[in-house]
Length: 83
View 1 (cartoon, rainbow, N blue to C red):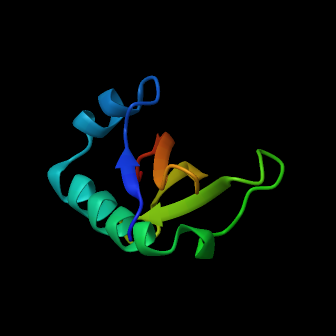
View 2 (view 1 turned 180 degrees about the horizontal axis):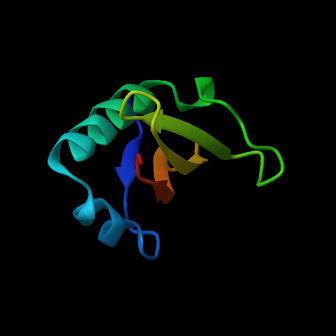
């Protein structure tokens, strides 16, 4: 069962709404794929054992994620839009 995707972290929804439509689609599509197996994403142990990094928009954008295996939820903590 895929994890649910949560944009509720402070400020993330605002950043998401400001992204260009093609960047929003890229992020959404990449998150849907990642939701099937979030543990396969690169880990950021300096943040926490649950922190993962996701690249989107052809590798030009990054998102910091927290994985909650108990609730089957991916929380988007930060979005760095492509430049």
